[in-house]
Amino acid sequence: MRFVEYRHPVAGFTMELPEAWERVDSVAGVALITVEPERDGWFRSSIVVTIEQLASSTTFTQWTEAADGLVREALHRYLLIDSEPVEIGGHAARRTLAHHTTKDNHAVTMEQWILAEGGCGYTLTASAGTLDYDHIADMFGVIANGFRPGPGYKP
Amino acid sequence: MSDILYDAESGRLRLDRAAFDRLVAWAAGRLAEAPPGLRAAGLVDEHERLHPYLSDRVDAIVDPVCRVIIRTQDANGRQRSHDGWVAGTAASLLLAHNGGDDRCELAGLHPTFLPEAVARLVGLGPRPRLTDVVPVLLSPTVLDDLTDPDPERRAAASDWLRSTAPGATEQTAAEALGTRILSRWEAVVTWDAQRRRSPGRRGLHVIDTPAGLWLVEPVGSNLLASPTTPSVVWRLLTTLLPRDDELDFPSGGRQAERPTLDGV
Image (cartoon, rainbow over all chains, first blue to last red; front, side, top):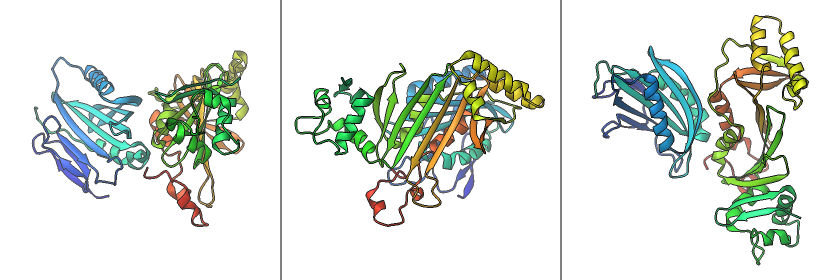
């Protein structure tokens, strides 16, 4: 698979993305949606980046706990499988692995990385059909580890 | 007397093993007519037709592409064994009741949800990381003793494990593994291995401790317990089912009759 260097036109964050995947970075409230090409009814793997402004009084732990609560409420049959502290580009981050069921009744494995930098909270959410996950998990990890927040960006 | 509870609204079916065996025998054509208990519970109508909610589940049992066995053992040695059958677009799980009797629930699911079902059954979730811990070689007997219902046997196995650890790193590992086991579980999928490159079997064996997860693999006549993570275990669960190329049949024609799992 070929990759391209992507830089968000406003937020300035950078990451490597599969060249063939569709990219949309003009949706309100979502910095980036990138989706693999259509595969005849299969669940399309995707990576979504969101950015939110963090109150100065909010700690990283408070933010991640609040984010966990929202995800748990929003996703059907949410099952948290793993959670671990990690580091992305020198920033403290947290990785979670979970499973949920979509409205279309797809079994989806979701891997999420969240990190805070410069008053911004960045969330990378990578999703794959559960039986596809093993094929794509390493790529998700490489993409997440190559993510770099935009310097000085304020939402 | 059979014990069948069927909710035709939800499709939830609870029954004992004997009733399950009769259901499968009838569905497979080994009985001339449906046993009265199946009719009385609403599983079969007066025209000898299975309730529509059950068709996929029972079809998967009668003509599976692969079989699944999930064995669990808790900290007190209580064992449960769940059976599964997977066909192209449907799977069934016969879930053992946790009361220790032979009551079961026959659940239906799409095969893509099998990893999730196993994860929920075994309580897979976030665990501490076993850092600076080396793999531990065990005899099957020691592992059985570590999860034995008898607390004295468990304690003796734990003491033995720690006493035989040769160095500091092995001692740390023995402490982590031998102090307390939350559960031990195994998930195994088997299928017809017509091709030499098809293993016909894939499984994983996990020990869950308060210190973290261990993956158990056979090494000769012994078992090697290696520290692992829920993420690794999840990836292995997602690869348990056979791929299309592992289900090919060289005689031709037969493959077309059998559903495959990729792309469902």
